[in-house]
Length: 486
Image (cartoon, rainbow, N blue to C red):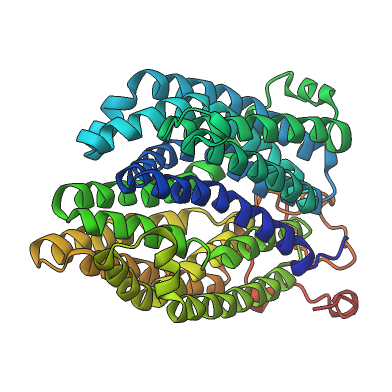
C-alpha cells in the first residue's frame, strides 16, 4: 500500500485554502475601499450562500471518504463509480439552488435580517454569485475527486489562477480602474463569478484527461443504489454538522444586524476575515489527514490511522497557537488594513486577543472531526453539534450579547465556548477507538479468512454481524506491521 506523507498532501491544500479564503478576503478588502457597509453586505450575502452550499457537501463530503477508503482497499472501479455519482448529483443540485438564489435573493436576505443599504448591496451580490452557484457545486465535486487521488497540487495551481483573475477584475470593476465604470458590489460579484468559470473549466478538463475518463458515467447504469445509500449514510450526518454550524452563524449574524451597533457589525466582519488565516493550517492538515485516515482505514490499518491522526492534530494545534499569537502582536496593523475608524480598531484589537481561545477549539474540531469522517464515524460529531452549537453558541450569544449587554464580547465568548466544548468531546472520541468499527468498506478487498500483509483483519462467519473492532482484541500482526514507518 502507498505510504502517505502528511506534509506532501497538506502544503498544496494549505496554499489552495489560503487562496480560496483570499478570494473572499479580496472582495471584502476592495469593498472596504468602496464603502464599509458594502463590505458588510458582501459578508452577509456570503452567509446565505454558505448555508445552502452545505447541500453540496452531502455527496462531495461522502465521496471524499468513500473514494479514499475504496482506493485504500484497491477497488479502483468502485472509486470511479463514486466519483461519477458525486459529479452528477452536485451539478443537478447546484442548478436548482442557483435558480432559488436568482429569483428569491431578497426574501432570503430579509429572513436573515438585512434591510436598507445592506439589503440593497447584498441583493446585488447574492443574485449574481448565488445565481451561478452551480459552478461551485461542480468544482467542489471535481476537486474532492482529484485531491483524494493524492493530486493536491493540481487544485492548488487552479486556485492560484482563480485568485489572479478575481483580484484583477475586482480592482477594475469595483473601483472603476482604466476608465471602467465603478460597479461596486455588482463588480465584485461579476469578478467572483468569472473566476469560478475559469477554475471550473480547467479543473474539469484535467479530471477527464488525467484521473477519470468521460466514460466513467457508464458506471451509473444501472443506478448504483447501494453506493448512493452509502453516500447518504455518510454525507447527511457530515453535512448536517456543517449545516448546523452555518445556520448557527446565520442566526448570530441576524442578532448582530438587529441588536448590536453598526461599529460592532463592521468589527465582526473584519475580525472574521482576519481570523480565517489563523485556522488555515488546521483546514489543510485536516483535509490531508482525512485522506490519509480514509486510505489506512480502507486497508484495515487502524493503529496506523490512529497514530497519524493524533500526530496531525498536534501539528495543527502548534500552528494555531503560532498564528493566533502573531495576530495578537500585529492586531492593530491588521485592523488598519481595513479601516481607520478608531472605535472599530479598538473593538477588533480586543477581540483578536480573546480569539486565541476560540482558535484552539476550532482547530481541534477541524482536524479531529476530519479524522473521524475519514474513518466513517459521522454521527457522533453531528449529535454533539446539535447540542453545543445551539445551546452554547446561539443561546449563549443571545444571553451574553443581548440580554447581559456585553455586545460583541459576549458574542465571541459564546462562540469560543462552543468550539472548546466540542473539541474536548472530539478528542475523547478519537482516543476511545469507537471509530474503528465505522468503516463502510469493512476491508472488503480481501476474502474472509485470508491474511493480508500489513493489515489486521478479523475472521468473520458469513452469518454473524461484525463485532466492534477494539484495540485490545485486535488480531496481532506485528511481523507485518513492524516494517511500516510509524
